[in-house]
Amino acid sequence: MKKLLLLGLLLLALVAAHAQFATSQAPGQVTPGPGNDAGLLYASSFGQWNVQQGNTGQFSWSSPTFCTVAADGIPLVPVFAVGTPVLIKDQVPANSEIVSPTAVTIGGSLCSITVSPVNKHNTFVLQSGTAGLQEAINYAHALPYMVILTSDWTRLGGTTAMITAAKGSTSVSILDERASCLVAYSWTGSAYVEDANFCSGGGSSFMVYVNGVLVSSSVTQIYMNGSPL
Image 1 (cartoon, rainbow, N blue to C red):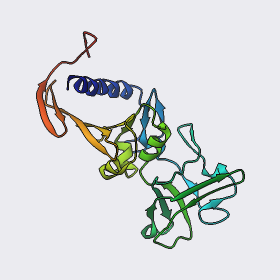
Image 2 (cartoon, rainbow, N blue to C red):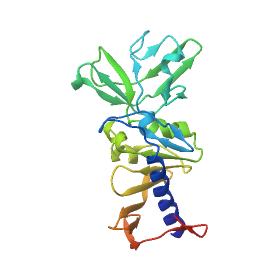
Image 3 (cartoon, helix red, strand yellow):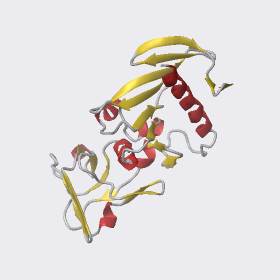
Image 4 (cartoon, one colour):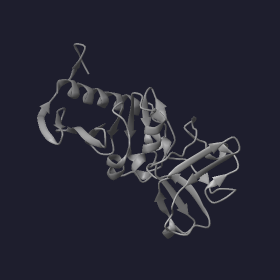
């Protein structure tokens, strides 16, 4: 319990530190970067890619480069993966839909995905079906990383349902910063579930929840290595 509390409030300190380096932007505008910031993977940076419809078929391309995108300079080769949701953003908005590839083929001179759309599509682009969340998890390759979800992720279409439907590993955790309460998720082996919830208790105190249960409503100071954070 103490270890989890320390970890959670350390994350609060990290978030505050990163905020100091934010670039100027118009309110409500989604901006790129960072993709990988010292082991913190910002999902919104992995969700701002576009792949044009295929040039040798609706979902096939004449070169693997068509299936390669970048997350703030990080190449995702390929961006497609079996089971990773893809948004077919149709020129006719009502025909847009999310599909999951059942096969991804990459060769020396081709790239293709196998999907089963419900709607008819003529002109469209392909985008992330999870606003970058699953792409960030895939990038981690089951190595120790934390995926960060911010308001920009929400602006790209990210939802809590996407968190609980994501496929991951015990090495890849998720921190949801979309609201005043920071919510930590971990992988159980079949799904991401809420581990802890850190909420402002007013003034300088914090309320701490673990598995949805309030364990403290008056945490005022956290120490690390004997020093206050």
